Length: 65
View (cartoon, rainbow, N blue to C red):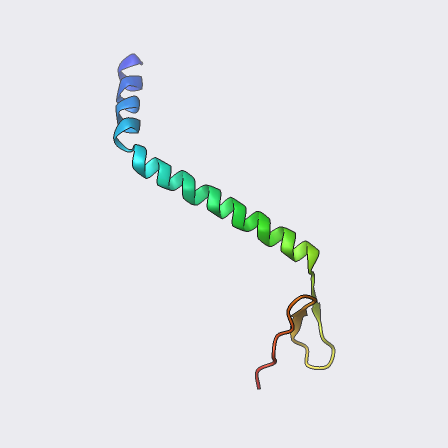
């Protein structure tokens, strides 16, 4: 058991940089998803009955013809 723990610790020390990168990516993903949820709750998408294209209340997208 202690040998396994020492192995695990040495692996962590060796792969510390990659672990930091993975944690950074996870934190960035979490922040982006929470920001997207907050923005979608603040500005919900609504459908226009005339051209049936989903337009936000914040951004008015130009319909493609």
